[in-house]
Length: 339
Ligand code: PLP
Ligand code: COI
Image 1 (cartoon, helix red, strand yellow):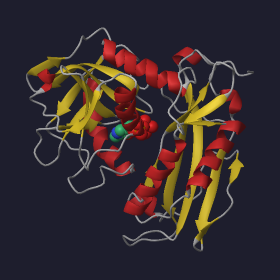
Image 2 (cartoon, protein in one colour; image 1 turned 90 degrees about the horizontal axis):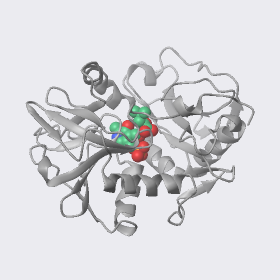
Image 3 (tube, rainbow, N blue to C red; image 1 turned 180 degrees about the vertical axis):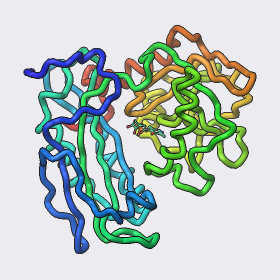
């Protein structure tokens, strides 16, 4: 490894790497795509992605294993989710083979930036699909760009495995009941910027959004899904059409049952019924598993396991998931793709 970075303290920051992948959709078909050193996109000022948010994105990571090889965690699931997002916004779909081939190319081309095993850091990949070209009415584009760029990252939330605090939002929603909350589109994140900034300024890691129809049930975090461990040994995650179908969450539902013997439950999580949980956390590609110390919901300040220590079940889930991702724990069939 020739690159010398402070791998243990990367945080979650953009870094321009030597190579990214880009492919253009025109006249009804994708071109072959190529690696490029150009980190700037050149698109029409009238691109629907810029005006009407006709875009979608993904997030996945490449992991360095103990033997120095590199692997991906369930990239086929990211490809499938981007296809769902594309259908919701009437964008050209990127076939799964093309998506995975592009991920592989970007990882190999930037191999020196895949962090060393044991640092906890990973190479974060950001696939992006945008509608481009000169369209000024609110209609789907005829042309699309699919690009994937990458950067080495560490913790998304400052605490890592140390719990941090979150605030329930009663003044803002990130998604509407029949809106785009279940798709990975920029508009959902645009809606979360103001509440997110207010939360950060008040010392919280992020916002817990409630169901937009009744504001009584937890939906998810602005940048991750929510989970709780109940007193009865259940691994509980909210079920709602307006939350992002998290690949980490579905992986944890399976691992909680198969490896930890917990009962996996997708269902309602009422914000006024947090006493049912002995532990809670946020989960996602960037967030990994981030324990939630406390949720502030108006005047109610609800502490789960501890504000300073990760709970034992959350730690077990973390060790299992991260162990699989870095190749130290056997993965369920089909989850790991070697680069
Ligand atoms: N929810 C939101 C709003 C997210 O941005 C993310 C991150 O991708 C997740 C959940 C977690 O999804 P995944 O586990 O697929 O990364
Ligand atoms: C991810 O976890 O990959 C995401 O897209 C979350 C993002 C807000 C950083």
